[in-house]
Length: 168
Image 1 (cartoon, rainbow, N blue to C red):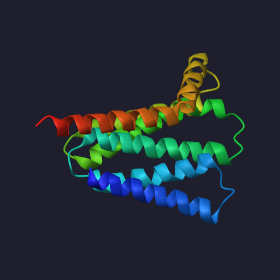
Image 2: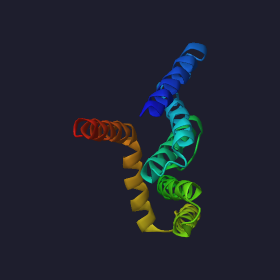
Image 3: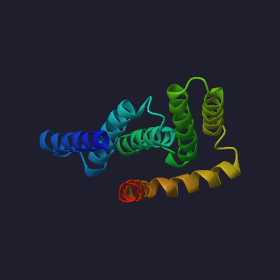
């Protein structure tokens, strides 16, 4: 837990430095950059510890923050077509991170490759499929709720940690 406190402190420091030296950078960009710093440091501390769900969560946080930065800073003509492929690629990145943690489990690599391929296919064929448009709209709604879901996840994580410490 101490390592994640250090990671959180460094992420807040990165946010403060960005706001200090680039005041017009924007709130969403600053939060996304802080989450990127937190997730990178968290992966560094978590890899090799056996906490696969934490690695998966950190990879998802990293990719979601990169997506938020890209969407916020670039003029993408059809944003609604990249939400679902980005969601699939984020799942693939999570499984790839778990594979890097334990290279003996090839099923994680297989799941990563499948999610990456599904993400690429849905990106290239997203315009022609009506069902993919539906999934893109659902993924866009989830992306709008991304900060709330992150806060809820952190609260659940902290509650479980405190519950484990109170029960010997």
